[in-house]
Length: 465
Image (cartoon, rainbow, N blue to C red; front, side, top):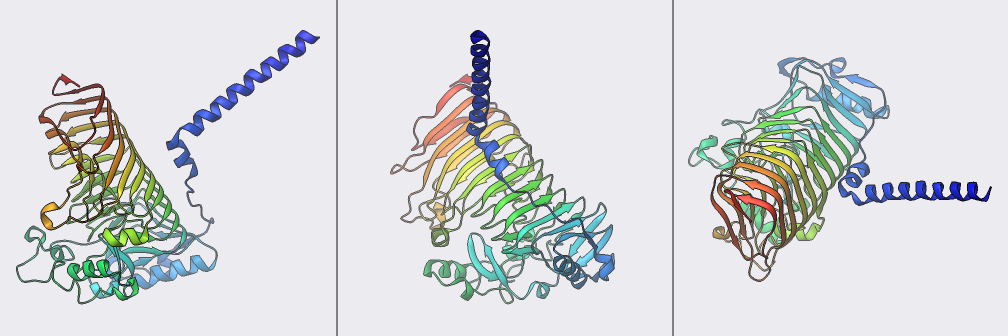
């Protein structure tokens, strides 16, 4: 009997230890912990079809009020799904409310009006890392909870060489010499001065008479956000820009937009972000993680953190996954895995950019299982001298450390396999490469002011490091 009891106790102890070991393994996986902690919004089982509120799918009728009334009715009953059925619907900006799932059925296309006055009155938003009052984003939510944009339809910003894009000031995007643009003194220069002076955001009023383009989808100070299945095209500016928000899921989204500054997804001052199964075919960075520009970033002081990017395809864009250049509040805990990047126009796969005016920090970046077909400049570029020739020097020394690259194959490495330009006063620290193969790089690497890279089973142009 004693032997039987001892055997049972031993078995229970072994089982208990195994279970505790499993728990420890789960707890030690930071990616699983981030994903499990993200709240994905759920909605009441109620539907509100915009056609029941007077919407017309002819691509010409203004449906702004019909969509607004459908959202209002849904909100008044506690939330649910606002349906945009098959067809073309012209509208002004859409403002989401808590507990609303804006759902585009397959074959639905939302066309955002080219009438800029429709995006007034101005709202609290941001431009290149600086908060201001400006034209409303095309899809906007301010201080809301549990919101979603889902479905298989298309959001068409209708930006182009005759609408929004010329304001960037580049001839290739339709700007004509002498026409208004964002670099005019009343626009970006004024906003930069307001940033430096600490002007209250309520007094940074732009909009009509100014030329700063709105973002496409912007949840501002929101919680529990889902963007799933939809396509964004012809964006005026940045496409998805969650700012000061938490618990963000971007799943199966297609961004096909080649305008100026058409970044695919730019989490800023945001926490707990999961970007998966997406296709990025963009005119600028595919994903750019940000945290404010200069004094504004330091004023807000909210790092972007706990960001997972996986199973995505970066078809075109300036960078695959980028941190910066608006990075003054810092970025940490970024995980990029199981992604494919391939384009003759893709300049860098992984990029970190800052300077001593932006300052900030980047730490704990883990890149694993990435397939890169072709990049123009470098697979990895870390640059702490970003914009040095445009008077971008200041007194805020950036810090970059703990960048880990593992299981990566690059078929055509471009100009450099690895390009790192740190600072003598604060070198880039703790960069590791494990099981990495980079082929056809014109120069294997150029590294300045960085601790020696730790290589394990890594080859560049056939040479072992």
